Length: 315
Length: 271
Image 1 (spheres, chains in turn yellow, brown):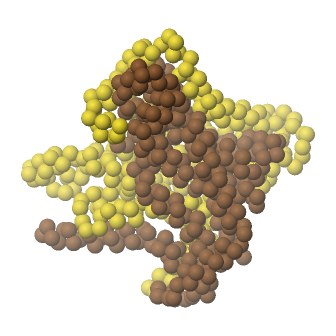
Image 2 (tube, one colour; image 1 turned 180 degrees about the horizontal axis):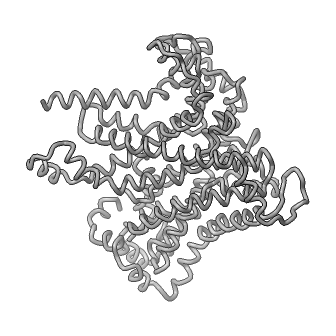
Image 3 (cartoon, one colour; image 1 turned 45 degrees about the horizontal axis):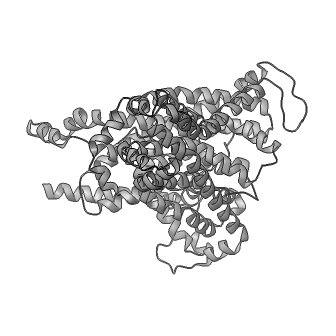
């Protein structure tokens, strides 16, 4: 049996994909009732533990005094950890940095991603190679990405950017010291631009070409076609990109850890890095847990919308 | 006019692409330079390539150790993940109930939890169990964090298999195992392969947990590369050679699995 035999029966495939959820199940109830549950159990149980155990522990830790350097002492302190985390002068800065990082990367990847996708959507010589090359940065591990930029691109003396500045007679910039957050934004955007672009390319392939041609016949110019046909078509993929990036980039860590270490001062510290600092550098598990709950709430706001959107797509 | 548009498109697409990929091209070039050439001002575009840095990176035994750790954790977490996810996806695709949808959604929601939210409990648990800096801890964490995506991808692949084929196999007396091995595996080879590839890529590149849960003994390549961030690690040619060895296999895998990867990461929301 091969894939052709599957393709030859598209009606059944559609039936399953769109079919009533309980129809196939009804035929197999009875003796087969236990089996499906047994098969599902390992995945459900492990994921449930993976979710609930850390959550309960975090909830508990967040209300006690718990320092890894002072074992045994776990007195109940109520909301003191939350108060401490929120009144930490680094907290406000880290929230602002998190939002700036998130917002900037999303804007850069969506705007340039759409532009690039439109550019490579039409045929031209070498299009296949261009598409493969474009996606490459997305597969580079974050620590390698960060160091490649930190050293070879952004070093103020030997880095490529400094060389380019000198070539044009400009003063080289010490990127990581003078613009630490912008530097991190650049690294993360470089990694995620290919992701956004690839999704937009995938989506553009299902754009109705006849409609585009008809609009052209009716005298619509390129800008009008983009605004009234292409952009609405890209609405959903853009929303998906925005939400996926929100979830993944809310807690950017490796890029900050390997390059700026959150500094200078707190200029490139985001919420994730602040929690890490509290937990594994200050050893204050209680305060870090309070911060972690805060991060979970932040992420859930994005997740609710994404899950609803994907849920609609499921049946 | 048409010709000019095509020319413009070709030139701009290539220029932008080369700009985007430039840091990677630079990484490859630097990897084949000597340390002196690597920091020469102005940089040299033409030079005699040398394998010196690769040799040095390879003779440092800790590189091989980290590479081994990366291979072990990503392969093991992929295999364990498949073993747990495939039965679940099979059950959801072929024994759909009213609750299947809710379970899928709930699994997805566990992936939305930011890793940093679980950092402290997982760290404390690993510490209590004496599993800090162990391959076991990393493998378990990688498996768990990839599991929702794996179930999801396998489910979408399995549900396209016509149920008639399964009925026929069942008539012939095939059990669940036989059904899976002889009917589903051949029909869903593509799905299984792309799920495994995606899982490999994600585990290989994973940095948050490996940086926090491992150091000298169980560190993966991601942590080894991170150790070059210290000021004394300013050996660009060696850094480039080590990075190139670490990213090349996965970038190549990525080229072949980009479509599945996007579908896996967007949970099929973009087609």
